[in-house]
Length: 438
Image 1 (tube, rainbow, N blue to C red):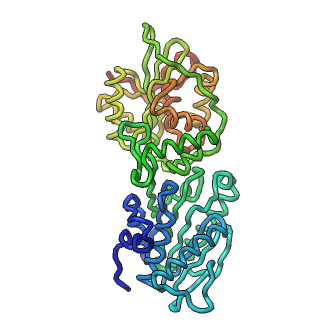
Image 2 (image 1 turned 180 degrees about the vertical axis):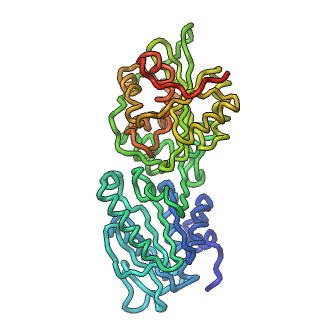
Image 3 (image 1 turned 90 degrees about the vertical axis):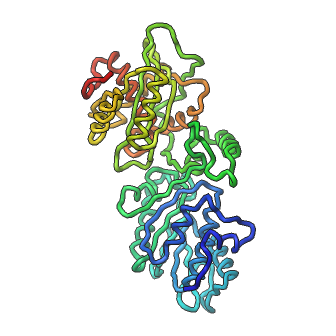
């Protein structure tokens, strides 16, 4: 095996137009360790952050070190696979890796010792292809294809077929923008043995620590400008969250309509402040976030004051709730819970955080119905402007009530609504699990 510099240093040597992609250090580390490792890995990288060129350079690095490697590169169409395949072959040639005579096509080439690259689309079949490393790079062309269950199944089956064909110690790496929760990554997240690296263009979106993932590639202001441009075409922001945040959304469900808005919250006597919590503990989750929603209730009207996404960690949930109680007063906290979430409620109460657990007897779509009705009647209002508002409204618009969707804030809003107002107005609201601690 030829001794080469690390992959990060190899990339700018391949093409002087590119700098070492330090922002992709996690991804590069996976690529560097892939050959003969048995690796199963998936990576979501924001668009235009050099992921495909990093893959191309990694292939040349692999073959320069071990020319016997047989690599399959898969993309959403044969045209796209051929475009990338041409770049792969050209770069390999410049790196001293020559295809053998008679085995030199863009789609499938081999060198004198049997290694090489086969390029294909996700709906193609190369039954005879031997595989040491399988890379699937954006197997869906966009949301239209990703929304079709039969296309998702075809992609999934093709990836599974070639994963099963991997040689002993063979590696499988998937890199893609996530257009749908039930995509190839979403189906593999719950499975044992798969590593998932998730990069968002805007890290800690809507918080005080909001920042760009790779400011030397795209600054926060540049990303927000692109977001504003995309919003004119796609008000639901589904494409932005898919391509830039890698937080997939199903098509807009039309359950929640355009919200009513307020400028100031009432501060005259008679209001109640309430907090809703969603802890998101489920093996089917594709998100790593929990959420809280703070609302003020006055009569029959609800004013949403704050929405926060919380890292799915008990310590982070505790600290966020304590901060909310300090800011908004000793408000009651409600959360629909089942299974292990009951233990988290007990832990929070033992730590002086007054959470009332509501038994989740019905699925989330049924639970949300009263909240949907009140929202669409203009009884639940959002502020005219807030740092968290755009992301929150995007998730509200795409809410389907399906387990595993990225809808933590909606679930938290439903908990707060039913705990505070549903109980008082409907007469058949859920019973609290345990008593509130003060």
